[in-house]
Amino acid sequence: MGDEDDVAVRFAAGDEHALAQAYERTSRLVHGAALRATGNAADAADITQSVYVSAWRGRAGFDPHRGSLTAWLMSITRRRIADHWEERSREVRRTVAVAQTTPASPVEESTAESTVDRVLLADELARLGDPQKRILELAFFQDLTHTQIASVLDLPLGTVKSHIRRSLEQLRRRLEVDGAAL
Amino acid sequence: MLHCDDDDLALIALGEQADEQDRAHLASCARCRSRLDELTATVATVRSIGPDDVPVSPPAAVWAAISDELGLGSPADASETTSVAPAVDLAAERERRRPTRVRIWAAAGAAAVVGVLAGVVATAAVLSAPSTGEVVASAQLAPIDGSGLAGSATVSRDGDAKVLTVDVPDLPAQSDAYYEVWMATPDTSTMVAIGTLTPGETGRFTLPAGMDASAFPVVDVSVEHFDGDAGHSATSVARGTLGA
Image 1: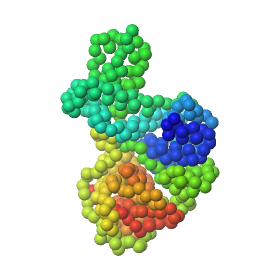
Image 2 (image 1 turned 120 degrees about the vertical axis):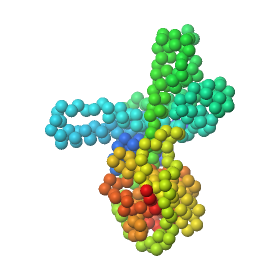
Image 3 (image 1 turned 180 degrees about the vertical axis):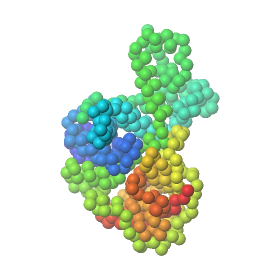
Image 4 (image 1 turned 90 degrees about the horizontal axis):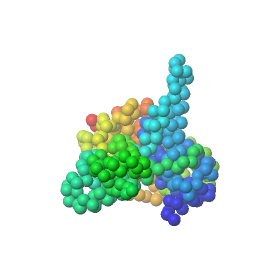
């Protein structure tokens, strides 16, 4: 059982230290996404606070055997960011006369979703070592084919292909969401 | 039926041409198509990452507020297991967010202030993603009192907000102290606590909306102890003045 799993199990069992450890590991991601989504330090701090408060109070709804604690916390973060926008647009509707005709915008929800995803993937990319990082940089941002990358970095074609597959798979797993709602 | 090779699916997701065989298979196999769709969505998200899509540590007050709201056990217990959960008194925390007068090092301050350096700063930009935040001011941070710690700071625009980015690459971790970023008036008589700087990370702080950043051009990084004292400790490790 990995270290993160151990924290997750103790978190679910109500160990306060596990909450502090989970906060230490994940608050950069939660707060980074909240800050990016709201552009406002006070709102981001509020969202971060509410994510961990509701996670702790709702820990009965978290099953450490079904998904990672990080994924669960990030799904709460998506929810809280969406709530924030919902609240904002309600305020706007209250103050604007055309209120009744303005439907809640699904665009904002999807923005909340993708903000969290982008911060998660930025974090995962930053963890990659070389040559994976260099290979992905060329594939993602320079649009080179794997044949070109192999030639630029003087690596065997098969090595480049398997690095791309493994790294991309690692990134995709990071976006897996936990189904539990909160 | 032989499914598509995982290596090939990854390359197709990145935009490379599928060969005849893969194309034919994808047309008829829902399993491979759905794998490809997931990888393609991942690629699209990575390609949309901007320089501001980065993890950012919350200010210490956030943990204090969580701990307070949940009525967690003594803060001393929490700080044994985690360095990000210092015992911070909320009232003191609010107090220290206000401009604070620090007289002690006003005289030393001016002499140590180092001039302006245009532009070049290591931000936490991801890989080679293009930078969109326009940099409005930047500074080189010079070591104070032989700390040997130099760094850089920029103020950039993020929509209507302004963001201060502070990078002191060799900041050593300390178990009984933390680092605070301040912005101060040119004579350092008035200082605003901006946030904590974590060793090994680039600090990124959204400045309060009502704050006139140009009135506080001095960027200072100080060593602070968990002593409940809201003011500047008078021990600085690096400092510089923002310029265009």
